[in-house]
Amino acid sequence: MAARVLLRQRVAAPFMAATLVGGALFPSAALAEAPQPAQDHLLLRKKPIYDDFEETPFPKSTTPIPSPISDTTPASSKPFPEPEDEQQVVPRRPTPTDRLAAQIGKARLFLYKQAVSAEDGVNAAVDRAFNLERSFTSTIASLAPSRESGEQLMPGLVYVLVASMAGSIIARNRNIILRASLPIALGIGAGWAVIPVTMGNVSNLLWTYEQRFPAVADTHLRTREGIQRAWYMTKIHAELGKTYVDDKVSDARDVIEDWVKKGK
Image (tube, rainbow, N blue to C red; front, side):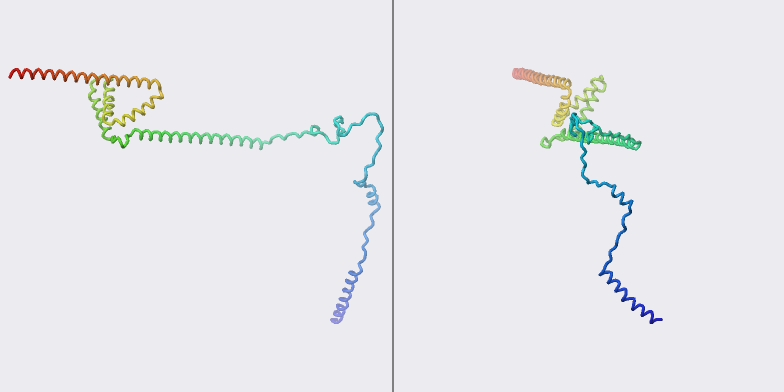
């Protein structure tokens, strides 16, 4: 049995090799199926798309035929319709989602504008506060006397305060006008006497504020001129009085000296 199986395998191997070699060297022609008669009929009825156009004779007539691109051609006979002949597209109505999105956009824009305006207001308020603080500090610094003047504020302010208190004590039992004006007058006088540079700076600052109101500035000028004139006249009368007293004293001394000489 084993010998037969081996013999069959040895015979089958050369036979299969010969069959493969023969098929490779001598290929056989494969014939396709012939088309059916019905399919042949359908193929014959189909017309190629590239066939020549058969010219059909037009009937002769005396009416001129307009050109296809002429303006006189009717709209129905034109090969390509004009844009107005095309069907107009109906716009789509907004959906509830679109309307909601539009309202949300408007609300966001409104909130953004309000936030921007509030931020601008806060920035403007902060800027005004900083400018006011800078102006206040610069104004206070400008009132102080310079180092070259040698003026000291601390003892001078104490003297001014003491003079004002003395004026209030002096006018304690007087009328209300005197009690209100005398301490101020004594304080201002002591200030001009003790700290003249500081009082000059304060006067210049008050004058800059008074210039904003012309009526107040004019009143101040007239009052100042009146005070200066009165002070000038007072000084002149004081000098005249002093001269008169000196003359009288000299005359009295001369008379007394003459009496003494005569008595001897």
